[in-house]
Length: 139
Image (cartoon, rainbow, N blue to C red; front, side, top):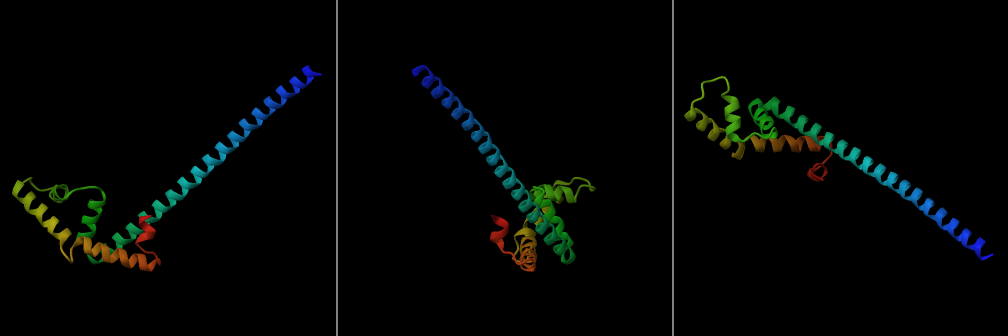
């Protein structure tokens, strides 16, 4: 009798372990699925942000093509000097011209009615058009 009872206990323990492994696999599958859903959601949010920025730049380009060009270069990660180099790419590299253009671009960005102010104004219009605010695109 004890021998049979001992075998039944061992079988139940093995059965319990197997069911827990299946539950862990199912849990991992659910967690991976949630991660996948979250990554898809993050991708959609990033695409919406990019679409809003592109729409803003297109609106800016209608009023100020020079500012739109500078914003595109800024979004590509270029600093003021690199922007100036890109503007002067077809001309002979003159250090004085490069410094003057770099300073000019820097001033254009930081003026009260400069490039960034124009971009911000158009971004606000775009957000109002889509009934959004800054928190929607920053989160």
